Amino acid sequence: MSILIDAWTIAWKDLSNELKTKQTIGMMVIFSSLVILVFSFAFDPTNNMVKAVIPGLVWLITIFSGILGLNRSFLSEHENDCLTGLRSAPIDPSSIYLGKVLANFIVVTVVQVISIPVLFILFDYRFLGAILWFMLIVIVGTFGFIIVGTFLAALAANAKNSEMLLPVLLLPLLSPLMIAAVQGTRIVLENQDISDAISWLQLMAAYDLLFLAACFFLFEFIMEGS
Amino acid sequence: MKELGNMLELKNMTKILGDKLILKNVSLVLNKGETLAVIGPNGAGKSTFFKCTVGLLQPTSGDIIIEGQKIQKNSAEIKRKIGFLGHESFLYNTLTPMENLKFYGKLFKVKNIDEKATRLLKEVGLHYFKEIPIRSFSRGMMQRLAIARVLLAEPDILMLDEPHTGLDQEAVALLNRIIKQKQTNGTSILIISHDFDQVHELADRVTILNKGRITETIQLTSDIDLPKMKDWYAEAVAQK
Image 1 (tube, chains in turn purple, cyan):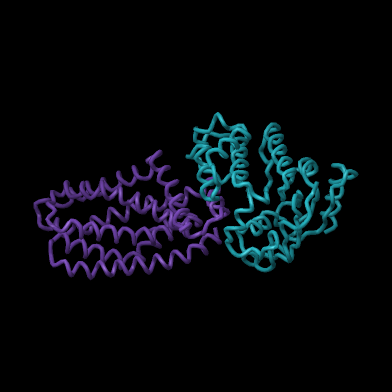
Image 2 (tube, one colour; image 1 turned 30 degrees about the horizontal axis):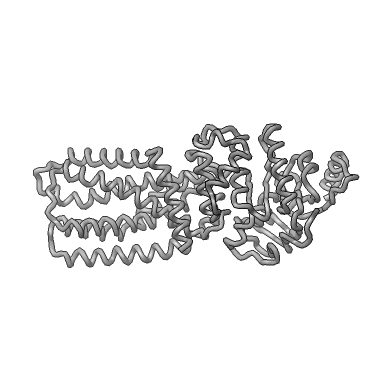
């Protein structure tokens, strides 16, 4: 229980900081809006192809705007060597990881809440699918992305040019999750048989659990090296 | 009046980083209520020695014993007993002094955080700045707040890594007053410093760490004045 309380303390510190500055979230929203705007000009909204690109665009804006936030997540802890301050505190090192996962997940979810409706509006897309299934797929997919992304952000933060290193490490690892997420989103948005989407959702849930367990236990070793 | 018994004991602590042997069989005892200063030339391994003792680095071999209890990796109970003031402040620039103290207070499971944080901010002279983000603070103000952060959890052992660096005379006097107050309360203190004046003023015992080894130790009795201590250090470092 203590590990969750410590994780929430760390997450709340990051979130209240973000509420004050709005630096990361502002940057992420602007980036995702620009991507949507550019793509809305590239594809004609009256064309049927729009339907085919929307699932991919949902995840494209999530991943690339999310990477902007992930990059800052641990770099901010290097100012005044705050990470050492956290490590010298009587907490489990994994609570630092869980706290960061929680904060990053909330920030990326807020960006999605703003950017996905904007995407639907600019593409003149009428949502006819099952909204709850759509939300579930987005949440499970985003959570998996944040689990792996936060871990790799911690790993990359110690390296030179960490901003460049993170996408290089992260994107290949995310491939199975993103394939499942895009397929699941497509099925729900096209209002097809939901049982097909459930199979993709199960794959995503398995990915999340596997990587959450691995990152949770391995995080301590990253901290030892920082 | 010094209390009896060991607060902290290091037994043959060795640390290898990469292929470099940083600490070689370091053995040392810090008694309850004692102030021990560790001095030595740059690159002697003092900061690594501190990081191992605090639990930030795992020693390659050897034991660290606090109050008779061997330190296990990342032991929260042990970390709660240690107050670590490092080279950096460990403080968040975007947060106010109060928010910084509350955050660390929660992590250290401090009771009555608000009350203690307010008292400490008054003690270190930052009470009027308590609601201002610390990014505009001077080095001296940051160090004062870092001291408040360390004292918040009321640790049994204070580990201070070059605490006087960059402080003005007023801040040095404040820090020394706090350290002396802690000494009278029976807190054990381990200081790493290059400032011989402060070491002579504060320490009961001084030990030299040179090339990763504890080479000499001296008890600072009343007959050892500052020049004598400096001569002893110069001789000890030149010999090894």
